[in-house]
Image 1 (spheres, helix red, strand yellow):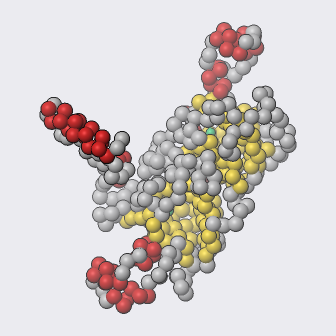
Image 2: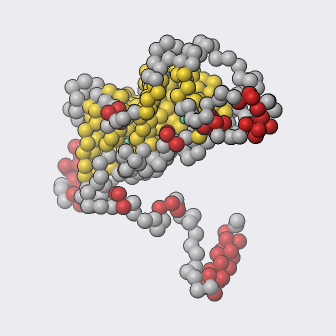
Image 3: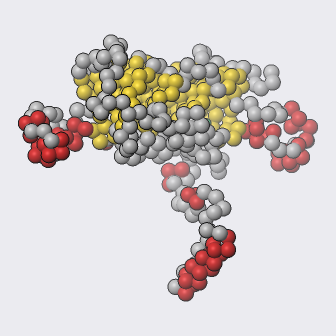
Length: 392
Ligand code: MN
Ligand code: MN
């Protein structure tokens, strides 16, 4: 719509609205409309901030054989409305059966062992991939997939979903569907006799158990029909995105892993005493999982509200979009934090950078201190500092 046409259109609708006794409409072109006139989240608008920690690996798992699944959703961690997570372990020969998620995309980080996945897209492309520790996958919302343990050792991976209300235990599984569909309908659907379905599972299998898969994946029934964008990314085998005195950061978003349109992944390694500095993400919630070590996470929520939680190995933390936070290694050995942000392109503003982006007189007035004091502050982004602090 040209400007002239838009003005005419708005004038027209304003006229109609006025005639109908309504308020004249306004355009939403000034910015992201999702925050306009929204109701404050009751959970985040109280006097105190709610807990933002959940001990995922200490929670009760779903168990079949030696395979396990533990989840963190709004049920377990009410603050985590934007992102849910699952810790899954598969024994050799076990498969998280063919399924899809109606309400979330799936991003995963392989922690231990080897995993094979297959995934189908709406264009009928399918891809089979093998994963090693440090690799990640991304399946867009609704795309059908399976996960299986490769080799004779168990595997463990962390799944991140871009919807905190999503439950891994409410997914659409193929045995659940076929087990509840009348056999004549199945026979017609597939062009096979009804007896074909005798003895099929009658309820959801969830973890299927069978032979260890062949080392080299076999060709799909339809033959090879690969998607334009791969679902696999070898994350930790590449060089860190940034290296600091006291820590390292790996980061992958859709700029380098194009299919991952709704999740950005980060891994932070921090030496004892090191700090991922105070910062916030303008466009994303943050979901944290402690792979190793012990950290102190702070959360700033405006109105004097400030909360600190200590996360240990296997614990989950959650930072709502736009809330200030920091991560400090308070253990006596290096720590590793897995982070998922529910946005396809990484964005953050670090406090040191914000300060450095202002003239001395602004800082002097703001804090009521001499300008000279702020000459001692960092002149660029700190991001990660070791225990001595930046510049020391
Ligand atoms: Mn899944
Ligand atoms: Mn962050």
